[in-house]
Image 1 (tube, rainbow, N blue to C red):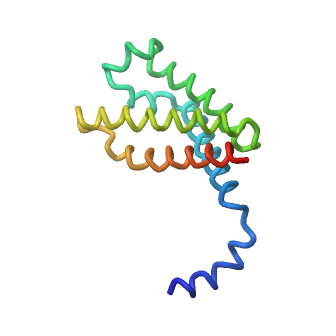
Image 2 (image 1 turned 180 degrees about the vertical axis):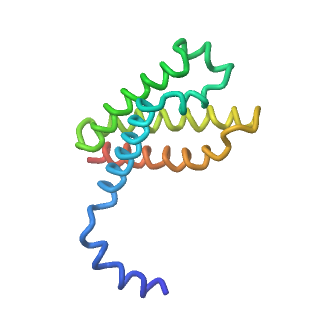
Length: 137
C-alpha cells in the first residue's frame, strides 16, 4: 500500500514547492488570517483573556487583540515574502509556545480552551520548524 501511494503521489509531489517553502507559506497564511480576523473582530479573540491576565496586559483585552492583529500582519507578510524569516518565525514560535503554556494553565485551572491546546501545539512546532530551516539557510 505504501509503495503504491508513493508511486501515485510522486508525479504530483514533484510539482509542488519544497516542504520548507510550504511550511513557511502555511505559517504565514495562518498568522495573516489570525491577524486579519483580530482586526475585524477583536471581541471574538478577547474572550481568551481570562480575568487574572487582564492586569498583566495593561491594555483592555480588545485593545490587546487589535495590537496583536497589526503585529501579526507584519510578521505574516515577512513570512509570506520570505524576508526576515528567521526573526518572524522565532517571534511566532515563541508566541505560540507561550500561548500553549497560557492555555494549559487556563485549562487546568478552569477547564476552558483545552481544545485550542492541541491545535496550538501543532502550530508552535510548525513555527519552530520554519525557524530552524531559516537559520540553516
